[in-house]
Amino acid sequence: MQELEALIFDVDGTLADTERDGHRVAFNLAFAEAGLDWNWSVELYGELLAVTGGKERIRFYLQRHHPDFRPPRGDLDAFIAGLHAAKTRHFTRMLAEGRLPLRPGVARLLEEARAAGLRLAIATTTTPANVEALLVHTLGPDAPGWFDAISAGDVVPAKKPAADIYHHALEALGLPPAACLAFEDSAHGLAAARGADLETIVTVNDYTRGQDFTGALLVVDHLGEPERPMTVLAGDAGGAAMVDVSLLRRLHARARGLERTA
Ligand code: XBP
Ligand code: MG
Image (cartoon, rainbow, N blue to C red; front, side, top):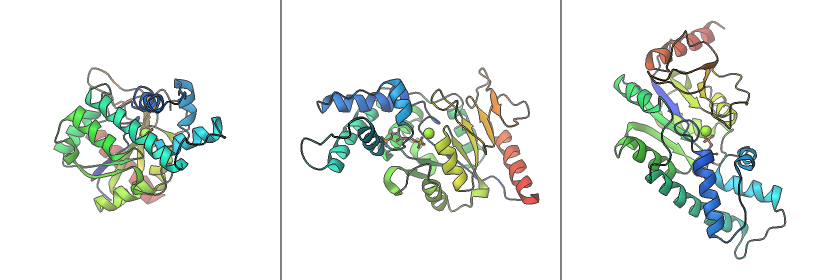
């Protein structure tokens, strides 16, 4: 049977709770800076998360809420790209200020996986500069080098729920999906990972808790810490309080073993 060789992580909502107090706030700062009176509330942003990717999200918002909007100059693509660049500047500054910590258990699991010889990768919709800033400012300057593949943003034409970004990461790792596990926080992310044949662990957050995670290997509230056990929402963690390498190996073996005999 195929051994577990690598872990592939989503970023937004999975490594850190970035959406409500990070991306949303950065979008609003960029809008204000551009003299726009658009303001994305926590509730509205929850609806806009239906579309992944910041530029795509701005376009979706305009179609829904300001269908007659015309940019003051240039074409709409260029206008959105400019707004989005400003948003990335604000978001990476917030990360540098330490305002967006990693979720429980993330640093613990990354360190344990490295020590156990598992390879690490990232598969995310977000802009590469955001991934770099998050890793550096939460885990240290060497952290981006821990990952054998960082597949991010516009490197593929179709963002999640399309599977493209996971195919990109698998190709960069040079591994089949059966050798890997994915970590996601949303139904779109789960669909992307499952579309690439990856078994997936889901850590929900406030925006995604009510979504349908059928097909996930395990659904938990977070990865857990020794002092802060996780709660299992779906799947069988065998009573474990944390997602650690030994649980991942057991889940992987069980999933792939079942698949082989199915
Ligand atoms: C994350 C996203 C991203 C961020 C914004 O989805 O949808 O768009 O909200 O990032 P996932 P950018 O976690 O499923 O990858 O503005 O840099 O696009
Ligand atoms: Mg996510």
